[in-house]
Image (cartoon, rainbow, N blue to C red; front, side, top):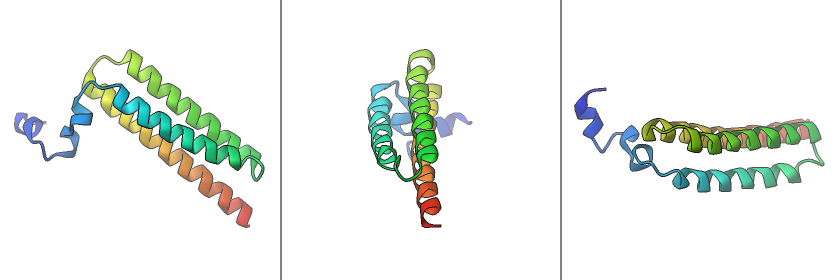
Length: 107
């Protein structure tokens, strides 16, 4: 990375959320996203128990990873990237598991 690209505010990787040290700005939305995904999957437990339960466990583990990351990683930029990645993984996991349940149930 060149020094000029570190100062360019138009680059996606230079957003304040990825440069700042705010743990709460990632943990609160991540927790809300995880809670919503878990509620949806709990409602699907009657349809496909194994898939929904696996999704719930994965989402809980990913959010636990977010909490562990917020506590243990001291470098603000690396912590922010890791928290962003984990939050994206929570969203993707929820979406894929809900889609898998719908596909299995429609077959």
